[in-house]
Length: 320
Length: 320
Image (cartoon, rainbow over the protein chains, first blue to last red):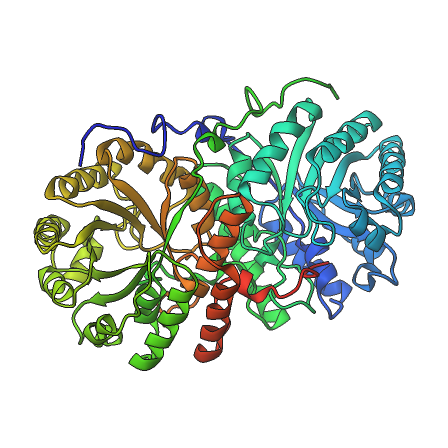
């Protein structure tokens, strides 16, 4: 063996990945939207409000509370207007809503939502299934949605679904996503969210996408939305942090995923993400203990163990 | 919004993290050792051999089959000598054994093991619990174990437990780990494995540890062993890949973890790791479909869903 030599794998042991880590991160809790909408049993509105209040009390600055989508296609969101009306006010907390078409944007504005995510898919196959139109038509509609929401006074997020691949279509060209970002920025989006809707992303594809997209996004905040279907959500987040990305969606307990598909998984669990960031010295302003309490309450209510790890760890003596 | 500008989070969008990604990775399957030893019910020897044969057929080049440890303390490994005798031979496959003291090394050599991991803890508190001596005494013993195993003709791994923190002791100084690596290298270790025994590591601590340890390790292969207790195993692996690390332990299905502690988790699931690496274009030589079959068979035998994600995803239409 040799000393003082170099590791065969690299030129230098210094890690450039950590040069651009952010000092703080804004987590958007999307459990009430992305999580609740995937539950097979509809959660009563009163109970939704209770869970939402617990989340608000955990110190989030952003929560995505509802989706204004077709009530027959997504009956779990049929009470969106009522939920929106009953959202508790908190200093420093901004509520947001998801919309998939112009009608959804109108309803979100009518409900007084200050922050609206106008979301379209980068995948033709996914767009045809979810929105009934190909991605070009969907992007045209997305641009109209962004303009309408901005004209209505809302802060607008341009959301791009399947930005890291599509389970139906496979790989999504990075150039396509870059073009969508440019169009959305041109239409007046205040922020962009790149969503790994079907959990296809990996650290390398995240890296390549951000290398290409960040220059196009210019000064816009670029956030990421990871699903943990293949267990790579937090690995992808770790790589994105190295690009200075400081806005991520996450779902309490890791809620979400299709209840009819074994192994399907939701968003990255918010409490696991808060733990990861705190361990790295990155501020979120979120009270981890309160958040763990929300996850435990939801686990009890839903009658199953949620994907999140941290909420299940009670004591320090947790391994051998 | 602005175009062509720079993302506020970073100087340049180019990712230096991926400059040193390895082209191939050697995964050591540790399920038969780290996994089986944590099962509350003892797996019959014949069945162990069956599972081990399935793993061998999945194309691994390294499998850690047994631990030579006290049969009363770890009854699950009481049949280690018999398992070692009955290991199936495969071209290109090296079997290894774990030892925690000199007696274990002697038994491993007697059993004809070609590769022996001499493992000691970097944590006093953990070492006192697991080995009955403080870490300095344990390191002295570790050096003797490495010398004995090398003298016996085995390839020797110096294993460092709790290299990324200890659930009992908290943070472990990086300098301490660097000194242990230097001592083990000096004693004749052929490789080093840095183990996150209690799942305390995070991407930043992994980065800092490797920055300090790789120069000390010189030309030795440095491998990593992550537990997924807090869901960070694959995130940690992704960061380690960026240092050119190309040796990792993993456990089929994510076996392992203390059965008496809710939420405790085992190693990173091998099949999830193979999927991650394959998605990044990194070769492992492992047949993912066969490996998923092993995980499914173990899940059926053990009567529970294992932590691994990939083995549960059957079809491409796996989300909404």
